[in-house]
Length: 332
Ligand code: ASP
Image (cartoon, rainbow, N blue to C red; front, side):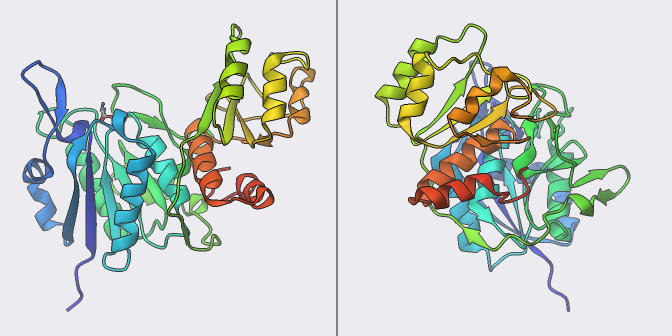
């Protein structure tokens, strides 16, 4: 008899499992309560095993330490199960899916994150559908990478961003095709799948000394220069206008601070769609002098987590630069 696929559910918290506190605010609750709300799981032809954070969290509190915790759970159980579903709050789910994509490069099993905009026990919840579909994708095992399932769509883990704070279609992947979408059944978009050419490389280190430098029309450049000069920062993700313009001049203290720091800088655009085209405008040409790395069409979530993982794992500058410049998991 063929064994049923075994899926590991990792429960971190998030709205999907929240209840109302006495104050009226939403707080995370137990995985058991979620599982009890979805009896359909018993008829899906899967065996489930579960791992829950001891204290389920609002994803506002999830960061590098928790990303490593999730990736370690996955890598420890990797050979014992056929796929993974991570239940997670939506607010920072795109950061976690990006971090897991880089931490767990070269997967040959699905790792699917999902959550909900409305708790699973409430009548109008999107949680049941999201959870069941994520389990189904994990069971089918066609996608062998990190994906984020939300509202009938499977996004590539390193290319997704939260784009709606309340609507059921909470996520978008503005510069990359989706991995699958559902009408009556799930239609996979194989052209968007990871080509399988990425060697298996599970990293076990991450560091958070990465500065997200947001250049705005009213940027307080002196203040930003001070922060850069005075702090231990190992990498910068610099957000530009449009296709890569910046309000920087060589005489600016911010330019000098960036130049003197001698750390890698990945540039991304603040625009939701379209990505960068460095070198198009004179107002961006100064970036050449900073020897920046183009983040092309990466999301900020992807650029920040890639920098955190790259700087933690490559001490040689050339190796680090190669890691940052090259496509690791389909993020470009
Ligand atoms: N604040 C919640 C969280 O991210 C929102 C959600 O799950 O949708 O944990």
